[in-house]
Image (cartoon, rainbow, N blue to C red):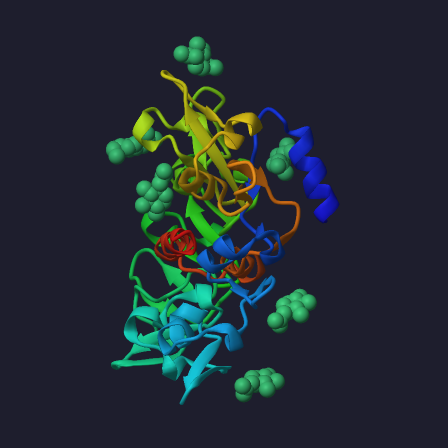
Length: 310
Ligand SMILES: *[C@@H]1O[C@H](CO)[C@@H](O)[C@H](O)[C@H]1NC(C)=O
Ligand SMILES: *[C@@H]1O[C@H](CO)[C@@H](O)[C@H](O)[C@H]1NC(C)=O
Ligand SMILES: *[C@@H]1O[C@H](CO)[C@@H](O)[C@H](O)[C@H]1NC(C)=O
Ligand SMILES: *[C@@H]1O[C@H](CO)[C@@H](O)[C@H](O)[C@H]1NC(C)=O
Ligand SMILES: *[C@@H]1O[C@H](CO)[C@@H](O)[C@H](O)[C@H]1NC(C)=O
Ligand SMILES: *[C@@H]1O[C@H](CO)[C@@H](O)[C@H](O)[C@H]1NC(C)=O
């Protein structure tokens, strides 16, 4: 896997893309970067994976600062198994911590389709219709039995959905396909996380060239491909950043644009590709379960990533 990725980076010398499923391993970092990333801990001599015993204050230890893995006991930080009941309102529904909870009756509780509000409901794991917005236990659907847009659009809770497509047919689709082409006849749905190309009339993966102004031209998120693509503005067009351009980024942009697949090298002040990787828990969750309520949770995950960078 690792060897494949290194080869991948070399052969794609013109443009560079990163997997959202991985990030630089802690062993890549010296003390400065190690202390910056909260998924790592400095053990005094080496950068190791975050370990409760190295977190020195209650604030660094308890709750979201340790991704709900540790808790402060009297005078030291220890590993702790949290349950939904331990979460406050703000963190309750955050699937990135690996818990499946929801906020009901002023308490954080285990997730259940039947008591989930419209906002908490997940079309991946529950049956949801666009028409009445109620959240139900998963149920198989026969898309061909629905004949109008109003009755058609719904998810079955097993990863499929019925969608009223551009040919006015209620048709079954994967709720989250890793191939944008699958959404070529549902333009509206395509544009939620892929790009509909009017010329070829197909749904295509997002790319830097989708950005038409300098302001947005930073990184492109290709969720179906689990990829992040750094972008650069050349004065007229937004294009994929090349490996040599990445090397010249400053420290802050190096971290921002490479989603922790490159690191800042203090030896030569260059943005440098990592060679060892660890799985990125936020997106590992996404790929393992895909049980996220669409849109809202993806935004949460993206915000989660920007927090990793702070
Ligand atoms: C830090 O971790 C490294 C690698 O696991 C280990 O060799 C070293 O002994 C540890 N140092 C301390 C002070 O625990
Ligand atoms: C947490 O749960 C795991 C698995 O059930 C168990 O092995 C571990 O000892 C528990 N840790 C604590 C701190 O209770
Ligand atoms: C997506 O599906 C299309 C049509 O089935 C196929 O031609 C294409 O190679 C697929 N792309 C990927 C990235 O799997
Ligand atoms: C770019 O940014 C502007 C303003 O922030 C926004 O209105 C626009 O929709 C964005 N999208 C693209 C693809 O350029
Ligand atoms: C920017 O890139 C586009 C497409 O590659 C090219 O046509 C254009 O000439 C470039 N502009 C500059 C200023 O380099
Ligand atoms: C990098 O990201 C941080 C946090 O999102 C932001 O505040 C900062 O302006 C970004 N810096 C650059 C150079 O893009």
